[in-house]
Each structure stands twice: as C-alpha cells, then as structure tokens.
Picture (tube, one colour):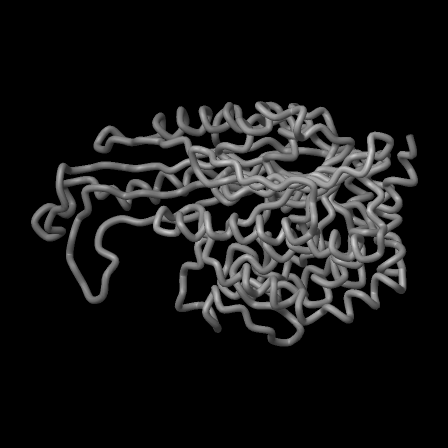
Length: 457
C-alpha cells in the first residue's frame, strides 16, 4: 500500500499533465463540428494504452464515434474485469458562465476546472494510471479489459450493437465503472442504483410563417404560449407527472428501505444554500434524498422559439421547441415511457396548433446487489484507502449501459465513482478534486487485489 502511494507521489505532476492534455481535446460528441476532435481523443488514448504495454489495443469505428478496446490478459486462472468509461464530453455552453476556458484546465482551490474533468475523462483516466501503478509494482492480478466509448453523452447510440457483436471479446466476471459520485471526501460511498432515462424533443407549430404580433396577436395561437401551457400541465401541484400510465410500473420501496436510505448524510439547509435556492420543490410525500434517487421525474432541459437576439422584435413565431427528459426508476421501460409521453402530449394539444414529438434516446434503470464479490472488493478497497467503510447509495443520474451489460454479458457492474455532486458536471465550471483523482488511482489497485482474492479459481 505504501509503495502505491510513493509511486503516485513521485509521478503526481506527470499524472496531472497527461490528464490536462486529454482535457484540452474538445471531444464534444453531440456537435458534429467536433467530430475530428472526438476521433483525436480516441487516438490519444490508444497511444496511452500502448505505452502501458497492454497485450492489445484497437480503435473500432462505429456509425458514430469510435470505441477503444484494450486488454491485458495474465492467465485463464485469474478473474477478468471489464473497465468501462467514456472520453466524450458535454457541450461547454453557455461559455460566458465559465470562469476559465472550458478546454484549458486550471487548478483552483484544490480542484481541476475543465469540461470533462470529472465526467468522465478524469475518472476514466484514473484506471489507466492505476494500471501503470500496478505494472510498476508487478501487481497485476486480474485479467483486464477496457471498453472506452465516445458516445455516452449522446445515449451510447452504437455501443449496444458493438457489445452484442463482441460478447466473446468482452466476456468478463464483473464490469467496473467510475462515472458516479461519492457522498463526500470523508464519507466514501458506492452507488448501487441508477435511474433510467427517456429523452424527447417537442415542436409546436402554429402559422406557416412568423407573424407581426400587432397585426395578428390575439387572433392567432402563439406556439410559445401554447407550448408553455402544455408543459405546465404535465405536473400537478404535488409535482406528480400527469402523463397517463406514467406510474403504472413504478415499484414503491418499503418503509424499511426508505428508513435505511434516510441514514445517508444530508443537510437540507446546506443543500439549498449551495444551490442558491430558498427551498426544494419535490414530489409531495417524499424526502429530498428520495426524489433525486428513487422517484421518476420530468424536466424541461431547453426551450426556444421566436426572436432571442439583442433588442426587440415584435414577432409571433411560427414554431416553438423544447427538449424534455424523464428520469425513470426500475420497471419503467424507456421506450414505453417515450410512447406514453408522445401520446399524451399530442392529446393535450389545442386544435389551433400541430405537435411533433421526436423520440431521442433512452436507457433503463439499474439496481445492483451489495452481496456480490465485486461490491465486497470495492468496499474493502475503499475502507483501506479512506479509513472507513463506504455506504451504499442510489444516484439520480443514468448510465444506460449498466442495464445493457447485465442483459447482454450477464454480469453485474460495480459503480466505483470518486466524483462529488459539487463537481458541476454538465454545467459551466465543471471540476474534479485533486484529492479525488489521486485517491481513485490509489484505490483502484486495491479493488483488483481484493477481487482476485475473493475469486481465486
């Protein structure tokens, strides 16, 4: 253990500089303008894997962005761990809210500020550096496979096809993912539940062109007004979602399970103060912890139409648009929920407008066992490096591939994240703590040690 810390300390600056080089590549998967940068990030990672003396590293093209596969096989009598991560990042917009350029990493107050620093380049790159540490210690004791994709932020559109076509290549005993968070630096935790996702875009069309709001206003339905009215009707005063059939398959947790969840450290006042809000506004009858983890949601992620430039333009727009996401809980199926939403949204539209619902992407929720050797190995590793046993938690975010790995590869996943909720992922000024980056590199080799010990063949 001390050898690991000594090696990390001796190579700390290089570990940071390498991550900074990766963070400078604007690998935004959602915007076609960055396609070459996404490919450049994949090539960069291939070079880094090659330098780690892996047995094999390849870039697999897809109809979208490439997938990187690497492996280091030490023997058929050893357990196999498949490490999953992603090198694509969210768009940096709005740029004017960044305190430093999003693709020029800087260190402030013990944190690395850059787009992708936590989600997921910083957390993914910990695994490459952990392999370097194990190589130096001659301590690789599991077969390692790495699956790093470039489309996670756009729904992993082509990953499922790749996994289904390469089940033998990806065969493993456990999947290890660092794309989640901990409760706090002094409260280590392991995520055992994720919500699913259903994402749609809606368009409301009124007149066949933009109109003068004085000449036509009052007679012609304004698509923006109509869209806002329709969105407002999607929830009642108790924040219950009004889409017919939305809750049909939602499983209610027992009071015992809810009581156990309430043991997670959480301070309502601190939470609100950190976000600059007066209070929370969740579903009636459920705690803050519950509404952000075990209850489904419906949120507008973006809305636009008409004139949004400087100054005034008195226009009655022809179209209005909104992007809407729904976080789902176990037993809700993303495809069914998107269809239910589309049917409901068209049903509530007034006759003066036309409505289109474009179904984007989705993924299923997942609940992971705390009785597996994977969870036990992660718990023992964290207990050793943090000095206290981690607690199991559920997160409100979505990693659709977790359920897919269960279905296609037939294996469980360990969500071994080292980020914090305060890291502002998907937002301006995303950050990742230096403590977290180096603690992850220190802890991951201990996971392999305990997983190999618990799975001796």
